[in-house]
Image (cartoon, rainbow, N blue to C red):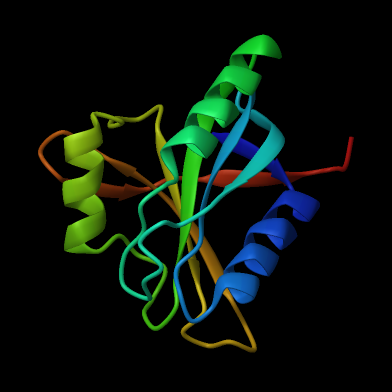
Length: 141
């Protein structure tokens, strides 16, 4: 189960709002399932319907995670006009990336109701099956 602070949840929402009307994207890293760092990554697609992580920023985030002894725990992105649930494109991109299974979490931030952003987490299996992932809000470090 992913353990995440409210400030990290708030930062994902702030990132989504800042990049609206386009989708935002990023990476969460930490250890033992607890998020230690959020990396905002530029969406090079500049699209309200899909995202592509800027390759150098993604690599830098992963290298920094390694230097700190952290694992990549989750990938997040926003849906600007739909619910916080993986789209067919999201599933296809996860399958193509190879980041699949119960230990890889995809976080969706929905701005469909801009006054009340929704945050949900999912695992995507090799066969494309989507399972909602439980998470826990933990006290600030």
